Image 1 (tube, rainbow, N blue to C red):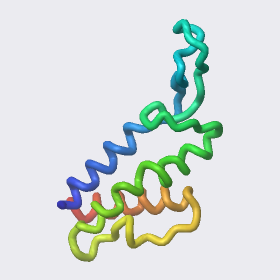
Image 2 (image 1 turned 90 degrees about the horizontal axis):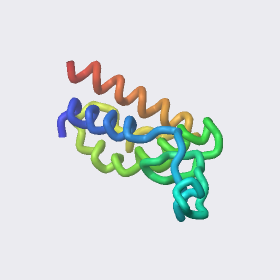
Image 3 (image 1 turned 90 degrees about the vertical axis):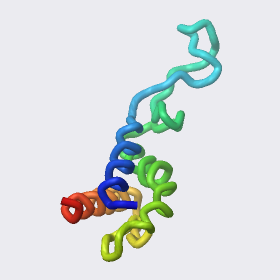
Length: 107
């Protein structure tokens, strides 16, 4: 897979997720049910209670499925699979660094 295509796919996937709210099952009281509105990622329907948990969600739940795809990047380019990280915040930072390096090398 070309680096520019991989970059576009990763950026699109990250942009799909946001720290917002969604109606938990069953429907909310406003919709005639007994459910509640909870904070989190509406795309994944994953509950997130604090702002620092959102980068953790991106690093732990959103980016890992793309690790095998990133191994197919061109030789010499850093891949998500090759980055050893300690925390989720470092994982997001590492991913952003990798995306930046892909952008520079694909121009």
